[in-house]
Image (cartoon, rainbow, N blue to C red; front, top):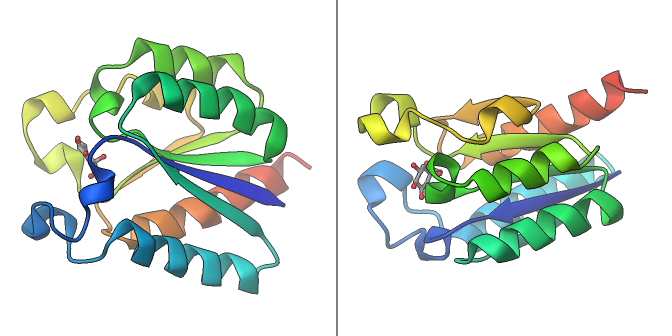
Length: 146
Ligand code: DQA
């Protein structure tokens, strides 16, 4: 099983960025946590981050060919991007939406997700553990499809 973790804008700043909201772990720390957990389950993981919307679209399209499932933190593009939503809708591979923070406990503009309706499910508010839960969710969705 191969799972692709895609991260959107400003997530490269984790560790420095708004620590009270996003915690002290860097994206590299989260990648290591996920990688270790996945290795124990016999799953291959790959992590990528970009600040560019079109690059996320490319990676979603390509990820559908190269991986079994995608765990996506589209960051601010979650709330704005029809292009990312359409890319998810266009592929057959399941996509799990994750957020570090509880977006529903924050500003109103974060309550709307363009991508939720085309994702298998949403995990938000568990800090770095949202990614570990995203991994488990991807495995559950893939196993239930067998
Ligand atoms: C985020 C939540 C988004 O609203 C925000 O724009 C982010 C990070 C999260 O992981 O909590 O950049 O996706």
